[in-house]
Amino acid sequence: MNVIPYATQSINEDDIAAVQEVLSSGWLTQGPAGPRFEEAFAQAHGVAHAVAVCNATAGLHIACLALGAGPGKTVWTSPNSFVASANCALYCGADVDFVDIDPLTRNMSVAALQAKLEQAERHGSLPTVVIPVHFSGLPCDLLPMRALADRYGFKLLEDASHGVGASYEGQPIGSRYADASVFSFHPVKIITTGEGGMVTTQDPAIARRLQLLRSHGITRETSEMQQPDTGAWHYEQHSLGFNYRLTDIQSALGYSQLQRLDSFQAARERLADRYDQLLAGLPLKLPARAPSASATAQSSWHLYVVEVVPSPGVADRATVFARLREAGIGVNMHYEPIPLQPYYRGLGFRPGQFPVAEAYAAQALSIPLYPSLTDEQQDYVVAALKKALQA
Image 1 (tube, rainbow, N blue to C red):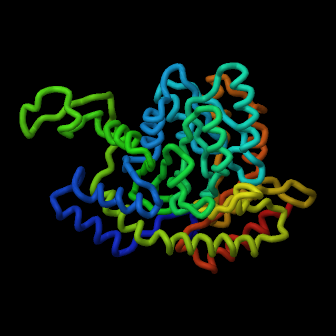
Image 2 (cartoon, rainbow, N blue to C red; image 1 turned 135 degrees about the vertical axis):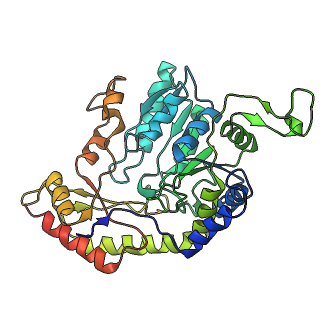
Image 3 (cartoon, rainbow, N blue to C red; image 1 turned 30 degrees about the vertical axis):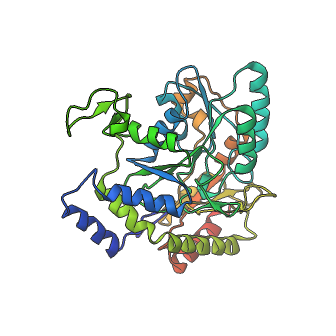
């Protein structure tokens, strides 16, 4: 049986040629392909600085460090995300906490964030960094989040791992509102480098800090030297950094993929619109189209997630999931709430603390969505889903 995956990469001959060119160039890493990819990504997202890294988790890690996370500090994020959105804070020695989600958008709730900030201010425990997650590619409501960041003095770090190509209030994600934004290039994401990520920022000081942290904290810039220059070989380590660099091979693939971002986006939007039409009237909650009633946005449509609405004659989510898998449809679930993972329960989190995220997770299904998904395959997914929903 041919399985229809929930997501997959789109590789063409241009991508293959781009990688082959690098393989013959003599520069497999730390060559010209990396800066070219960074410049093109920054331009596409309307931002001054883009710093490529080996994966989005690494990007979240060094972005947290660059924004001041560390021992004695606290980072807040969404419980509805991959564990990396919280793990990055712990890598820095910071504490982590969560803000419950909005039941319609599945993103961090602005109302819950404001209430938690008011309580934290009374107790002298405000966060240093808040990481909203653009779940499935739908932007969070960034304008009120930026206002809260300015009021309460925390840094805003977008986890835009799902959000390459998404926009909010007519501007690309990563260009405004946040202090820094992190994107993912994993194969199931909008564009891919195999593994890889990017951190964007408008702040040159943050960008330079990120550049140092991704490469062992080492500089070769004459203007930054603290000791006498001993020759052309001279370099200095100024901080404890990491080896988080993206190779030229990966950067070449990413640059090639980026040239098709508009066509990828258009295909995803068309398929999402078609799902909305085909699934209308079923006992399903479909994805939201805007982060709030007052904001406009365009999702990148990394995922198309439905929620089974429990009712008489409707099968439970576990049964629907199993039936779809049996039908050769690689349905998935995004995500188990982070605070309910055994590791995080060991840190003191318990069921019931984030009820909206838990209620969502109990009914969620990610169904196939990617640019090469055909109408015939989509029709098959919808027909199988209709059948699977029957009790």
